[in-house]
Length: 85
Image: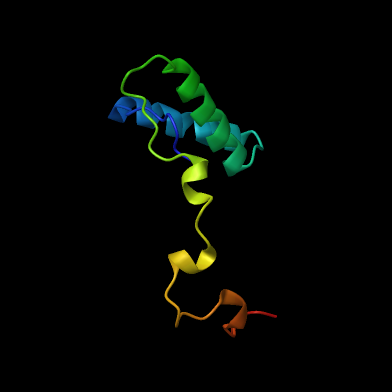
């Protein structure tokens, strides 16, 4: 998830966005481009004391789908989509 992502300045955020756009313009998927840039940022800030874990994947392991929705909320599969088909 967002484990170990450091706080970035506005300028660093802009540079990251530009790199993501560059990778995408070269044919890389948005997900791959984001993952690559995030890995680069994590590596660059590896010993940065501000880079602290925000979420760890195991934080979500003990929860089930019903923990994240109301009991009266219909499943997405049960909702008729007028645009489908």
